[in-house]
Amino acid sequence: MNIFAHRGSSGTHPENTLAAFKDAATLPIYGVEFDVHLTKDGEIVVIHDEEIDRTANGTGFVKDLTLEQLKQYDFGSTFSEQFKGEPIPTLEEVLQVYLHTDHCLNVELKSDVIDYDGLEKKVLALINTYNLADRVVISSFNHEAIKRVKALQPTIKTAPLFLNNMVAEPLQYVEKLDAVAIHTSEKLIDQIDVAAMNSTGRSVRVYTVNHIEQVKPLEALGVEAIFTDYPEKMLRTIATT
Ligand code: G3P
Ligand code: MG
Image (cartoon, rainbow, N blue to C red; front, side):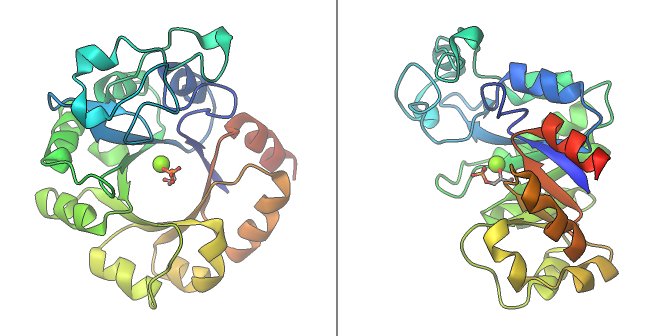
């Protein structure tokens, strides 16, 4: 079973910060997942929500703040005083953490609430600047964004995300998108024929798996990877079972 660190090592570090990514980079796990948005001045930043309110000591939408303004806020203290002063990272800063590792980089385009103009193109340009295309998989709940990514760069790996509802024919859907995998919440797993998906060379990956008891049943179904906030704990668990 492969492991993705969800928002970096977000169970032990502030989510989507360099502290969380540097920790994940030291682990012999398959990959890391993170979420991207566009700032007011068109910079790609790594943060989960459209607004900074939950994770920073400030308020406002990412789309209404410049990178310079966003960099003034503290994204560490809401998690723990130990991480006071952790800034919001840019996508470029996160990619730089992984330049000399072999982790798969799952860039989640957070364009399902705000469909950021030009996000796909900017993300691909940066990935290509660092020659990371082979190690990247781009996912999104916005499947139109996934199609745009594929149209811009047909060889890039993609995966549609699902949260509350599954499509009627997941395998055909993924084949039509020419995606390498389906990334789904655990509650929808019963609606996917994992074995059939695997037989076509495509994978099923499940989020967010933080409890040890969740792993074995998913493994038995043939799930290829999990996204977890506790990659180190999961690594130890999987290694010893
Ligand atoms: O990509 C898997 C997972 O991150 C999707 O949900 O809300 O944690 O971004 P969310
Ligand atoms: Mg995500």
